[in-house]
Length: 82
Image 1 (tube, one colour):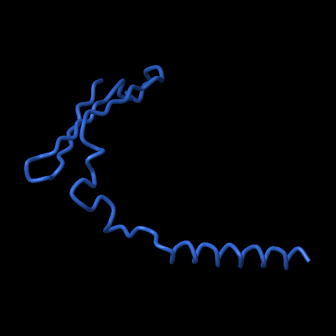
Image 2 (tube, one colour):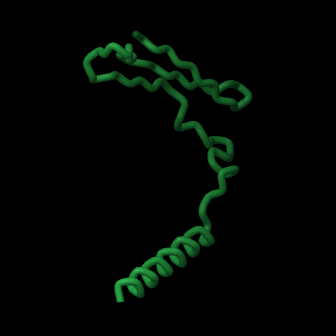
Image 3 (cartoon, rainbow, N blue to C red):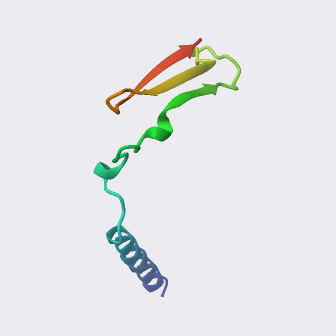
């Protein structure tokens, strides 16, 4: 009985996942497509390591800057601080 229940649940999960996949998931080539696909990335992003310094020498903070060029490309630069 447990085996039958497991098979029914597994089959239902498989059918549901195939239905979701066929219903219109985004293809990898469509990610960021269009004139403003990655505009959310433009700006300055920073993070700070809240852990105490270790022997491994983890960065205390790092900053990433993304700028949009005239031709529409986005260039990303980083400036880690030790």
